[in-house]
Length: 219
Picture (tube, rainbow, N blue to C red):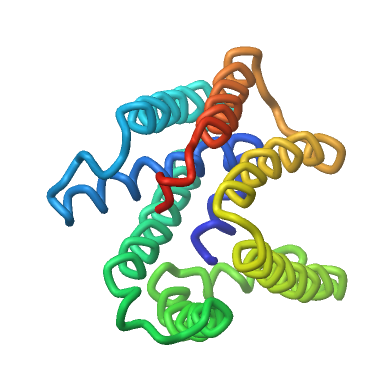
């Protein structure tokens, strides 16, 4: 998505993934409000998600590379993603499309909204000054990113459909932690001990929360 790309322009991958964990809290609150029933989830789940949400705030405000526009786009991405999750939750009985078809529609609508959105945000005009605009490596990188992103989404769908709920939800925080460590090998970014502690707190609480979740808590 355009929003996540704009966010990652100035946010490190570990910080991005840590704050992204707050999606679950927003999803929980939205679903409970729309059902008007806050007993859908156990108290333990609420504690885990509120701790993650609070620690995510710590990640943001301890970031030595803090840039308000990037975090603005990150939260736009989180809210948009949560809105899709909630919409599917409340329309799952009438939505007949498969997850792969929903992914396809997501890409189509992204292109439809991306074109006028880029114009309104001024990105089209700024592109003329982009220093890598005429480098073939830039276009190869964009192509590779799109292909790999699609493959990753297809693998995610396959994993969701062919594994139990608990297996997928336990693999997700592990994948976030692995991606955070791997990013250190490929990217350079400034960080501090406090920032690292907040990131570690979010990831570890998320991991613990998913490993203590019971099958009856499926979302």
